[in-house]
Length: 343
Image 1: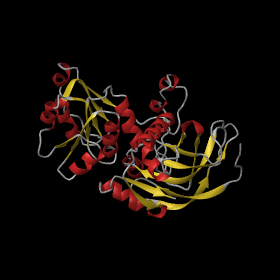
Image 2: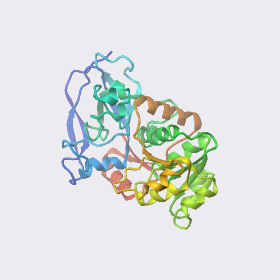
Image 3: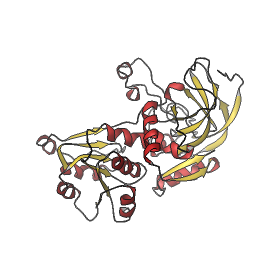
Image 4: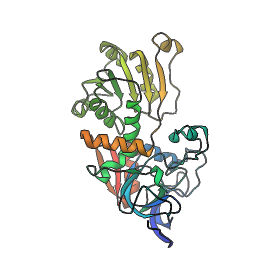
């Protein structure tokens, strides 16, 4: 094992305080202790959830804070208690950046639902920097077939959609609809197809139809010109609708299109209430559930599935100095479909 003991500096893009933009400068680099590893960043994806830190929409953030939770890099140094990883390993860290070990969820092994979850870029410093330090327990090993830039979005957007679909209860051949063909949705369509589902893509307008079919959708529904629920019913109803959009107005109509025992699974972080009545759920035992991201093991399984099946995120690359430009492009909705910083 190697241990880094000297203090040194690194470049980081931090948010000094909410709504004040980015400040790129030198900050202290944390040396690994205990079971921690120091990661030299190669890529970091930009996620819409990074806006929680930039805009101050998450309670309890201590500023200045370095955003970023789609982290991929090389292990540069290890703490004395590290057992699994070694210098030179390529690893990724996602939404799950640490857990308390003592809450009810942790004691049940459900670490990503920890009551005191450590989230990179929100509660601990994240990946908009040259280096990052995390416990080896939250580090996922990246398969050789994936480049670091390809792997970065899979640490959040990828594992979230992958996990939600594989735990939603659908079986091969079932109708599974992906609501939204954006940063999460374009991955969701690919996952649904490769998992053997009768894949339906739902988006506004006709401009995403061709891409959706190329990604693996068997059916495309234009929510602007078609009745989403009626179209899903024509297919026998959806066993699962995976809502990757943040608009609850777009989510609500899909409930009528669910099959008996169908589920609306939400991964898009909307803030407005859903317009759903109890009677819509009762008769056919429909349900609505949310799904968080995943652990390092989940991320490894997601990346290995992508390596096996050829699934890849569509992305735009940016240099570290252009991090604010990349963030603004993501927030504008014009990124196709994930923005990734390269170091």
